Length: 502
Image 1 (cartoon, rainbow, N blue to C red):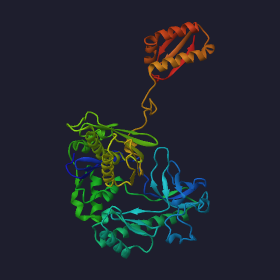
Image 2: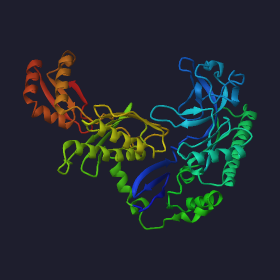
Image 3: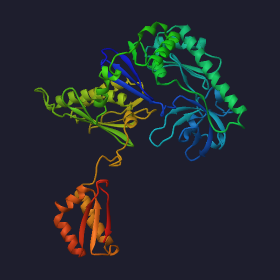
Image 4: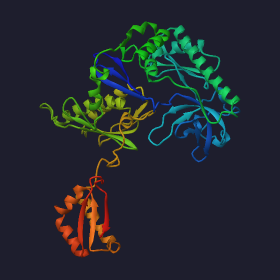
């Protein structure tokens, strides 16, 4: 593992992986596959396929596998809006009937704000936001603001004044955290670059309209950079000392990018040419396998259990073998819960877990201790780039929180539901299947003519019928007044069986 903060990039065949190492620990892992590139940030000329007045939403065809979802608040307000139209209002009012703004077959420019997750399609917005290294340009919304992560009021006021002076004639600018210590010329250069990107997208939109009769369907007018480009733009901060990459072509691209936008950091990009695979050489591969387990150990001996379901993710904290060092039980529990806070926030980032999350801390009797754990949680969550909210710890030790989800979680990206258990993680016991067979025999006895009934099932079930359930088998034969023969089939699922007669 790298001993300092580093971006380690492995470019494989059809897959790129980027690992952010922070204080010699896995901070974040990002994966992009050639067949599953994220559409987040892409801008499309989409077509309205359905308007849903009851939901104040619409489905937009942008050329992805599933139609994208657009809520009325992600539409631009009508020109004659009484509150000032496009120049003042950032979003269409929730109360504005969506049928007044959209109709089926209409074309509009949208940007993907949230990628497809599970069975849900992407989410799109008409409020375009083009991220650069230091600023975000919002061509459709008039605003000037500064990232909330820049807490110093004096710096915020200075940055806002500078941007007001150099802002484009149309649209707005949001200063990113990375823009905190840069010069006016660097901010101006970033804004000019993003303006050019926007103009290029508009030209593609015009070209699409001009050739609409010959070119049917949606079209992408702006595509976000690939994973390597995005990570260099967004993650190569002053806290990250180096980028290590194992592909010569991407190494050259990175140096070219930095030569334009950050020339003083060009020499901080290093090409790995060692004999072992990059992630093996840095111990990352083994750490990934350990970090994605359901059970995550804590330093003192306790552990977390992480269960990701469809509706929410539950994280349970356990003391395990940690019993304290001569202290009372409450101190032991507090120590474990504080350790858990550090690991939970790390796991949320690393696994990219989003949506509703329930944290089950070990019950604490003292309200002061619950407050300590809650404050520690809030402090650690402030380090997370994703937007999070958390409510205070209940008397039962539960915390309900949310984390903004824009991409599929790492677990869902790397794993798929078990085809054998259908994702439940459990199977019916052999005894349960045996008794299901006996009940089915009773139901179908009149449709099974002959002197012998053949039960075709998994070998383990056949074996259980002959051993543990032998008396039940004999009783069934007596009740049916026929012999029951077992026919094992290794290709059968444990819960599968067939009944035939002879």
